[in-house]
Length: 411
Image (cartoon, rainbow, N blue to C red; front, side, top):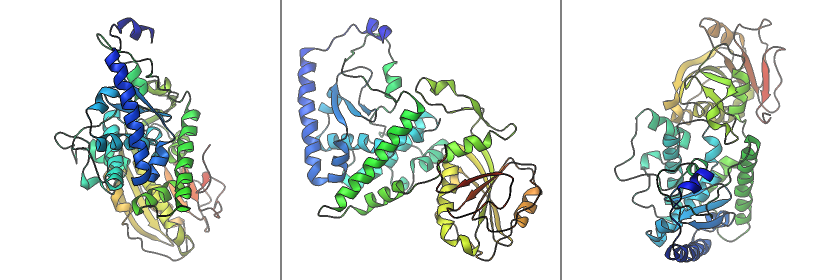
């Protein structure tokens, strides 16, 4: 900060100080009004401090998960509806865990994808969306990861006049400076010091979301359907695939992601993410569709979607099997939507041998088998690494390969 202070030759004027006080009161009133019209979002907003600033490094607004910082001059130019939208926008960035979901993706495109996801929630919740905010009805049912894939490959482009309305990386903003600056001492975001701190902050927001939903259930009025679906999706525990794949893919020779040493780009933020030789994941997944797994197929598909969402480019060979291979196809990052509508055939017994026979016909980097494990597996392990992802009551079918249960968190 010392270098910044040396360049900060402009001080806050009395007019700016007065504006900060005015906008703090206005935004606190905006949040209070939301308690009547949008109580769910307002209750989450109460978890964050509202801090007005006049600072060259923050032209709009942003959050560190504990505070909402907003440029008083920026908010003063906004309508009351826009101000409420911007406050709610920062709240839902926290609630959706967008910071920990970035996972090394390109910051600009990830910020756009997150704004599209949040703004669809808020348009339904508030009945309003600023004209210059990123919004596209084609992204209505897509996650930030799915939207990111479309933006990355140029399938969709932001509409003219629409842009992000906030600063997502406040840590980087603190270190950006050129020429004369206005530095506001109240602008002091605190990024999590370590990866564990970031994970803890993300989990605390997940718990807040669940707690507020439970509290709303005890009060008159039902939680709107679009919010209920979000809460239900976040409430369900999932295997943290990024950590799981990090451990699993370390065993591969070569590959497009180098998991050790970590990327220096993110260490200063306490994020020990993989350094990237590229952004391509090539993987084979075998999905057990036997009768004993029929209730777990939706869970399997959700996890497959998680795999695709974790990488910029994906070639995912999906083999559906019971006693024989029912289907064998290749999916890419653009095929995420298909997993929601994937028609699975089968439902008989289980035999792993046809899967390994099919896999042995081609050179594989790795194989993930989603199953309950209730079948015989080859006695001899294949040349490629294999991960058995088992149902909660599943058992390992072999003494080789790595094993994880769907309800077992990776550590």
